[in-house]
Length: 458
Ligand SMILES: Cc1cc2nc3c(=O)[nH]c(=O)nc-3n(C[C@H](O)[C@H](O)[C@H](O)COP(=O)(O)OP(=O)(O)OC[C@H]3O[C@@H](n4cnc5c(N)ncnc54)[C@H](O)[C@@H]3O)c2cc1C
Image (tube, rainbow, N blue to C red; front, side, top):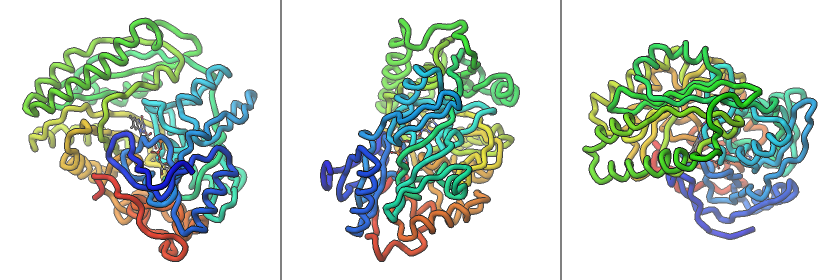
């Protein structure tokens, strides 16, 4: 145990809690012991990854298990391209280890700070209409349950638990180890350039189909977006390497410090935001890079922000984004951060926002010093009208009653949770809100209450 009543805050500063104790297990036995001790003491318990969720999903007033000392690669099966890892390993550390083995993760989001288990718990995704989210790359895991037992599951062994655990929100237990399906290491050739947002919207389907990965960042108050198109290849191809000379200038100074300065100027005078957006959009140059896949996928993010992201049926994406544009014009809201637009393939995981449908994602961001609730609520109303499902790790105002009809396999997930954790040992305020309280109400063995929660909680 490293401490009692020490505070914990997430990366964005949008969620904080004061756990009864913080522990840093370094083995599966220590995770089991921590869970058993928490249950014996009538406390709730929560594993935390890198705290990169914007919601209070990782908060607890019980025992917080930090997994940063539990982050090794345990086994590699090169022939079947499988890797087994301890759950606290970060995406970046795993990606670096894999490239040395001639392997890579199939697709990644835009940063690598998250732990693999945290990323899976919230259905973290990248972009590319042929690629599914990270949870879809798991093919086996070990779960420490509320009974203090270790349960092993895979598509062949206890598939019902496995499907639920692929996107678990941390509600089923502490994931101890994970086996992930990899692909041969590959390079990405990526082009970033300013393009009219109207053109990107009109040609969205074509651009998704023509590139392995396509996304864009639209600057509110301007007609411009930064489009990023990438192609996969076994060879490096044309373009500068990401970690080559000049990368500090573009990745750190321009993408982060100059962007941070723009946010500080916006803070001085909100009225400047449209001109700052126009200036930033104009300043975006063309950039071409080619490097190992993870080096291109993963960016540095030094400017803090709050974020909400919604998964929509793909065919709703373009109309929904147009409505967001109209809403910003109509309300006069001043938005200093770009809106990110991505596409991912459908999957078959009960609580994945991409369950059963080709998906378009729209993400809205607000500098962390600015209030986000009004903007996010306006956007959420549009997303709800388009059958949107919120990203579990990003801010939203939904509850179980509103979410249940959006997920065809909702009740099957809850049945697994009721079986594995009827008392809500792994629950917290966020899970009580989005999943509903546990079946047994959590009042007998486990104390209620779980942290102060996120400022955006509705
Ligand atoms: C700068 C930034 C960029 C981002 N980019 C993307 C992106 O490109 N795509 C995207 O989809 N999302 C993105 N996200 C969101 C992020 O990927 C998710 O919120 C992710 O869950 C964070 O992982 P984490 O390790 O920080 O987990 P945490 O936020 O610490 O925890 C998330 C959940 O995982 C649970 N958990 C963690 N470890 C375990 C375990 N071992 N067993 C059981 N449960 C566990 C926690 O209890 C909690 O419920 C981004 C977030 C930030 C801040």
